[in-house]
Amino acid sequence: MKILEDLMTRLAQLRDSQAEPATEAGTPPENAAWPSETQWKTCDFSVKGYHFDIFVPPRLVREAARMLDEKEFSLDAVTGVDWIAEKQFEVIYDFFHFLSLVRVAVRTRIPRDRPEIPSLAGIYPGADWHERETHDFFGIRFVDHPNLIPILLPEDATYHPLRKDFSYRPELNHEADLVRPELRPSPCAASEGTSAEASAIS
Amino acid sequence: MNHPKLQRIGNSETFLLNLGPQHPATHGVLRLKLTMDGEYILRAEPVMGYIHRMHEKMGENRTYAQFLPNTSRMDYLAAMHYTHAFVLLVEKALKIEVPERAEYIRIITSELNRISSHLVWFGAYVLDLGGFTPLLYAFDDREKILDLLEAITGSRLTYCYYRFGGVANDVDEDFLQGTREFVKMFYGRLKLYKRLVTDNIILRKRLEGIGPISAEMCRKYGATGAVLRGSGVAYDLRKVEPYSLYPQFQFDVPVSNLTDCKGRYLVRMLEMEQSLRIIEQAVQKIPAGPILPAKLPRTIKLPPGDYLSAVEAARGRHAVRVISDGKEIPYRVKLRSPCFSNLSLYQEASQGLMLPDALALLGSLDLVIPDIDR
Image 1 (cartoon, rainbow over the protein chains, first blue to last red):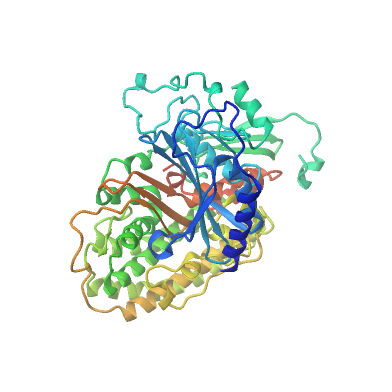
Image 2 (cartoon, rainbow over the protein chains, first blue to last red):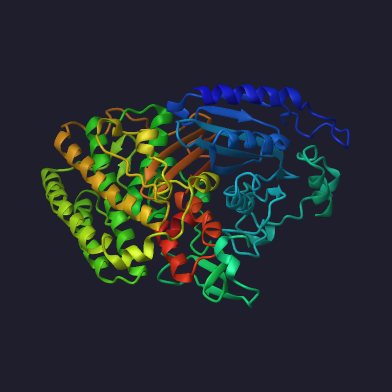
């Protein structure tokens, strides 16, 4: 599959060209399992349903999507997963190729107490709605998203139902457990300067 | 504001028209906030969520078998396909072998369901455009399909017929004979629809040249199904990513280069004919045998990891992604809805259209709102 080989070569170049810079606060991430490098593996399509699984740090999500866009992939879905035991959210982007049978899953992990990730809405306009839905269900903030308002939940919803600690008692669901988020290192701070400003304003 | 049609609209006042959640032409509870200048649409913003039932959360507190009825409730017109996707996922992950007779039954029922779903689309679409007659003709044919499927599944609409490894009930000779008669009758009906509706000058004027959607726009938004095939891309999961026994059947994938509403309309009408071909071949070749494998695991537990499976539903590519942590209850179920992606391009595609043309475009996307909202 030539498309996959091209993709793998370019991902190797991406990994080698962008080494992880030191975080601003100088403190290591809270969770030691927070990945900082790009990894990939090929999967058994007949069991898993996709060919290629790429793990990127959040700040490289846009670059990976740009590469896939050039190779004429289309965005299938954006899935959020709440790994509450590991205190992380995982975001999985599924891509599929129009004309040949290649399925790629790009996954990334962000800390649960500062869930921010660069938005793909500039590259794939279809990601606009998928990201709004993921924001509704998990509270993940997509930086530079044009219109991050609830899409499936009511416009004034402040709760995020697919979180594992979502309670049926409304007074127990609140976003106020983010204490001084601006002091924590943002996972997408290294990508563009605007994201740091945006998170500082919020 | 650089759409060519918008050039001639001056700086006149705009007003907001609410094509509210209750409207016969939105095919469900979809709200469209239209910013209009006279009769031209400057901006159409779909607002959804009126039938959001949170199936994905329900997937997290039910076992795999208990989630099966949920799969039919999302797109109730093509419910077999949605159950098929979920069942396929578990079978692929646990390497369960499906007996051949069960695969044939699945294909026959899936294609019958595809035809009945397209008949609803056809009747409702022409009704939106003002033609009241074909609706009841289409529903009459659909009743025959529903009678056949009710005899074996017990439900008229939200079937929960597939099980992990096969199907729930066996089909008898009455069903096969009824299917043969239906196929013979329906070929004639398709000719009638072509003469009465497709070649009708009024319909042609309403559809030709309206709402062009390029293949590049489809790719950027992730649109699949007849929307994509009506823009010239021959993408049908039954051919590109074959599942079940589809490689053994001979059928074509209708593609249209027209990219407008007429192209999508023709693609769906021709798809019904291709489904008839598949059903004919399947009914002829169906073998005798069991409908469930001899040995099934007592409890369905997927190994930890995530799995993806996709089918060609009547509306496009429906994918299910299950993330499992090894327990009986999935950790996360993600349902990829084809109508969600198809509708997301509506905002860009409807700029500068007049209101009736925008409704023609909306109908040609073949939406079922409970599928979008899940």
